[in-house]
Length: 89
Image 1 (spheres, rainbow, N blue to C red):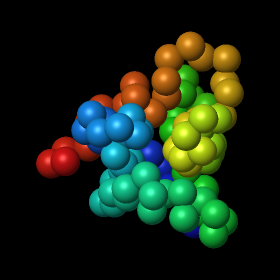
Image 2 (cartoon, helix red, strand yellow):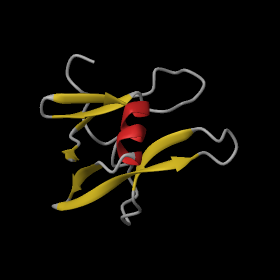
Image 3 (cartoon, rainbow, N blue to C red):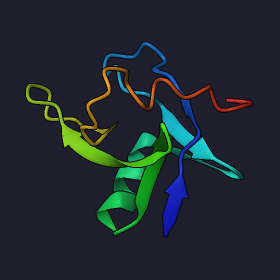
């Protein structure tokens, strides 16, 4: 399944410093759920200047904690954090 991401919920200032989740039209998933979905073959993407940029799973080098980011796309801004906050979250 393919998911178009158009909002996020920012970090709640806990120690892991990860965003809390992402969403789209009619859906919202926590970061841990997104990581599991990607591991099971689902695809998430954001639109950046008319291009689809995939959401990928990365592992922090020191904490070893998994998090989500977008593929390198030569844009300096963070594609996920640039999205608006998910309504009601």
